[in-house]
Image (cartoon, rainbow over all chains, first blue to last red; front, side, top):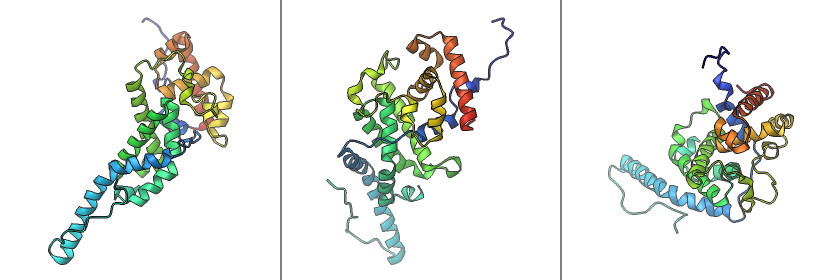
Length: 83
Length: 174
């Protein structure tokens, strides 16, 4: 209050988004512990494949309907990550 | 990223294998806890799977986008897990950390030796690197840094300001 100094540029107070990107992209990688790399992927796929399988099923049905004019029954989509 | 957006599972797996050490490394450096870093990495890839269609190549690389999501998620996890972000000595929790790294949040040690960043970090004083680390790894504001380090607020502000100006010059980053 009452100071005559010019207000400093606030963009210099915090790392800019560009600098944050440089920092995060230039850090050295760290491998997950042995076994975690694969088990983590399995956990991710469990959460994504279900959604992907439903999407694929819809796509397949739509394609078959387009070709044959009617939906083809049964034949579940392949899911290599089922428990 | 387009193939992931189309839910191409093999493409997704390839991307995971190519990038997980970067994602896990960043998450681990921020959270300083392996289990939390795994949870963060898991969330990052699930989010990628669902949001890949919104990736905008004109705004950066897929890896850059992925790491931005990762940092945000890791900081969220850090705040959720440990409300005392101003941990007086976060490096005490060395059990959570690989033995190969003595200070996970020293940007000089953490940056790849071939990287431009590494050279820029070498020019900075330890205090400058420490404050930048607190801003990057813990998203601390000036007052939090002052409380964390015990330095006067004015010193924190001026030091960080000089640090950012130096990096702007060295890295050509706005």
